[in-house]
Image (cartoon, rainbow, N blue to C red):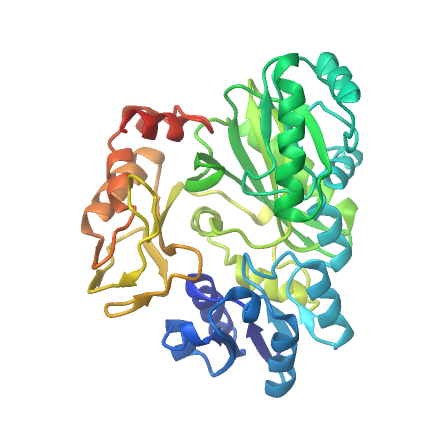
Length: 447
């Protein structure tokens, strides 16, 4: 087991990893920018190192400063959390060259899954169902028209190196295709420095289903069930739940088994999430995230397994602590991402939190790094906390969530709490009857 872990992140995820390390008796080092000097994870860590000014590029994305912090403090491993350098293959490679363990997969696996085209090819080879579309990058309009005609309109054009909805355009007819192709390539080049795009069948009313997987790097893999992340705004997840209200036990077991086998065959090490669009009983691979997810607590709630503990165990060479038959699913869990944003316009709302009170009681968990008097900096992601609620079934979970949202108080800034209070009372949400387009349509009606 590691002696000292450096946490290369900030906010609630840095605090989440820090807590896991303390439970395992591992010394902790956190890095921080000057803007985060008073952050909760900095206060609680055994050691802290300031690595630069507020801009991420000068601090949390500064690989050389982070490696130097490891060497100064004697950290023998780095946990990257999510975001920032968590899916940076170069970072994983550099740590390995300095004999520092990256708590995550190999740089090679990060590279494969970071390229959307190569990821799709790999998924197909591993037996994971994929969305019909091009086998590789599409550069000419003639080729795009041929592929679109074969798979049928509407189609979606996606950036190979993309994410977050950038470089994605939908074409409903052949007339739309030329403009969509040009626009997607232009956006992809500007956002990612790579204008390669590919084409897939566009599903009209899919759900976003993701499967939590783990590999030990020695040919063994397991799954921890699925999460439904269909409530999204501009391709960003807002509300996640496990298990999905759209799947039955047979579908859950089938897709979980496919993913666990794929991870084992890949020789993958650590946590990963295989993401799908799901429509009419069929799953279609869209991407794999080679890191811990923001929404991992709902999986922990229904399995009772600490996924960060598992990450650390696997990275230290201890292998998986559970076999597939040991993993049981209990009840239902929902996570709401509470952001420092206007609940209607979603404009960021940095500032000082004058009063912060979290809900409590059975089945309630709040992951947050803020406190009364804390100043939300304007430089980073607007997430200030996650409310995770667990119940014996979805009905109880929803009732508990409604109560918890009423108890949650954040004064001094605007937050998205009012949005969740509206959603929890909506009939479609109560019935689990929604898809990836539902939330944006709901918000448009309120404008």
